[in-house]
Image (cartoon, rainbow, N blue to C red; front, side, top):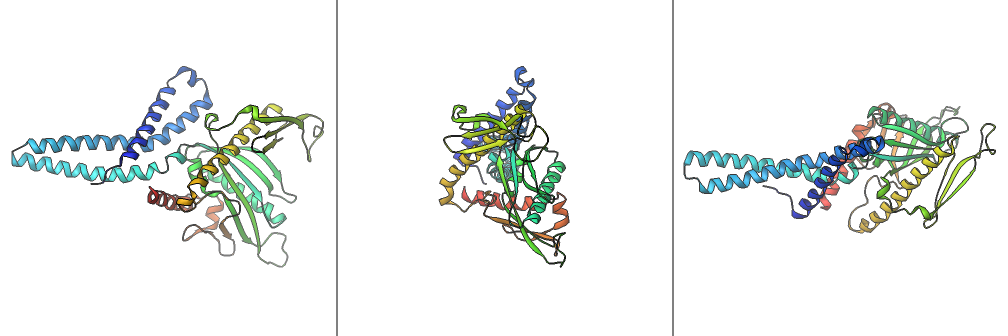
Length: 360
């Protein structure tokens, strides 16, 4: 019979306490009035339940097995002993199954608990075709998010000269958003014939994707007094108000030099809110990357690390397939581009989970 080690029991007890706290907070009248907080707590409670529920079943099965073992020792009737022995064997099998399930879910608990993220798509090499490709990728992620029922909010978008986007930043929120899309960070390469190519030659273009987990405010080590805020006029193409009305918000986190500029809306208040949202996400990712780097020497680099220099996937239009460099096999290109990413992502999750379990 496989059972959970003491260090995992300790962590599971902590997650159980967090789950109970979420339950309590959701009954608090003050919290109920804050719809954003209710959404965050509901997502966190739901993700914690994926680990806590089987842990409660495991705890109950262990207690029942212990009681049955005592009963077996005290029982002299052969028929009753046989019945109790069969019950113990059934419980032991259940404990083993729950142990494997809990360990698998536990190694992903931190990722599952993050309910929102910032996704940045930027055109890479390839000129106008790279901007068109970045736009196609952005649409792919929007379709996938819509299929999962997640909320997508555009924070910033810079169109390409002939379509697509040079750069776009979106916030995606919903249960499982980070634990699924967290693998998309890296360089996405496309091999296809551009619409402007008269000779029918295949071109190779790239776009980079960065995926930043968006934390709650309390999770970020951020002193607002360290942030320099400037209100300026918007820059770039636009209507009459460009360069006349001060609505753009420019933030600089002085200790790290991280900068954010937001001018996507005509409202200074909305730009400020979006700028702080993006700054927190970038600082959180920086802090997370630093802690991950400390563990990098003891285990292989995590898939989906978000490195912009890492080519993670190639989309081959001639062959109508998408090939991910981290896993075996290929996936139907048309399905993938229409947002059908789940089979591919499930394969990445399976590989990631196996690697994390091996490191326990």
